[in-house]
Length: 124
Image (cartoon, rainbow, N blue to C red):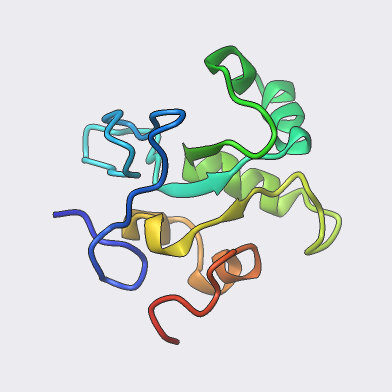
C-alpha cells in the first residue's frame, strides 16, 4: 500500500480529472514510474506555462488552472528552484495527505510544506 509523506495511507487526490500514474485518482508511484509522479499538485496557469516551456504541455491532457494532478517530482522541484519567492504561482500548491512518500526521494518535507494547502496534516 502506498503511503503519504507522513507514512499514513495515501489520500485520494482527483477523479476529475482522473490523475495518477496508474490513473486511479491516487498519486501512486510504483518503481516502474520513472517520472515519480508523487506530488499531489494543484496546477496554476503559471505552472502550466512553465511546464510547457520545458517541453511538457499539460494543457494537452486537458488541465486548466485549479486542476488537481499528480506531478513529476523533478518538474515540481524545477519550478520550486526557479521560484521568485514563496508566493510565486509557478510552483503548484500541494496536498500533503495525497503526496506519495516517494516525493521525499527528491525534495525535503520542509520545502513541500511551504506550498502545502494542508500544512498541519499528519502532525509535525
